Length: 343
Ligand SMILES: Nc1ncnc2c1ncn2[C@@H]1O[C@H](COP(=O)(O)OP(=O)(O)OP(=O)(O)O)[C@@H](O)[C@H]1O
Image 1 (cartoon, helix red, strand yellow):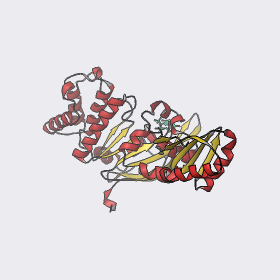
Image 2 (spheres, helix red, strand yellow; image 1 turned 120 degrees about the vertical axis):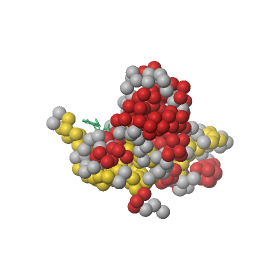
Image 3 (cartoon, protein in one colour; image 1 turned 90 degrees about the vertical axis):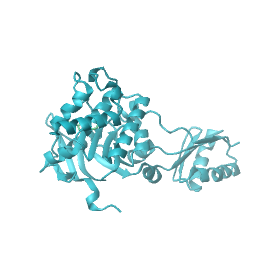
Image 4 (tube, protein in one colour; image 1 turned 30 degrees about the vertical axis):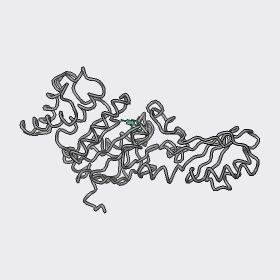
């Protein structure tokens, strides 16, 4: 059981209002959240949802308009310097200077945090090893690939041994292989140092597979907070998609699916989509029922829910179509889990 002392981030009614051309923009509205020490939490949401603004408040880069938060044991308003000492923050832009060599950049960062020379060198070499920077540690940052630069950024964020690391879209812009490689490193670091990680991402699959907890933000508000599996179970459900031989049967098929326990059934042309608790178990009964009524089905597929289905259930919009998430979403798992011809 977690105790109060395990809480590393705690925010209450945290809000940020910007004034743009005299008009208010409520970037974050009444954010409540708790993160326990050692957790890996992802903030997921479309462009403009308020993820970065939340991170920037929690890392003391900008003050909240109202509300409060304690991060790593200190109040973000009263003790911002204490908070900063205990956290690492890697923003969306590349924080490394372009001209310094990688190892020198790490040493400068250690000096910036007031670490002694010996301690800085030890820590820099440790991170060079953990993050596999050895082969380019003596090269200037500007010549590195996107994935290599991102790993240097992460080393910079960890040089002072923070207990908590904030990563704002760490893998945006990287190709799938570099993303996988970066994640391997992030997970290994976490294992080695037990660092709590709080990150923002557009990538649905990344949040789904890697985060232990997913917080979904939309229009400045947190709209869900659970494990990916929990969100999918409670908010999305499995789907059965039927293709009928004849579109004229669609209304009957929808009624039949509802009678068979589907929580939602809609038709579009010859396609009927039903949301059910367990598609595996529901499919056979549904097909039998349709057969009994003389409704011919040419194809039936089962779909496991994705976090996009969760977002759709919560907001009525697809996360992939809401801004850049569309461009970023790759490797999604919306493919039919199983397909079988009914007849
Ligand atoms: N410094 C600022 N001045 C004015 N408005 C801002 C500022 N920073 C953010 N905003 C606005 O606040 C809202 C939330 O922006 P934020 O960057 O937090 O969203 P986000 O979820 O991180 O988006 P993205 O995924 O695109 O990074 C947006 O409407 C944005 O235009």
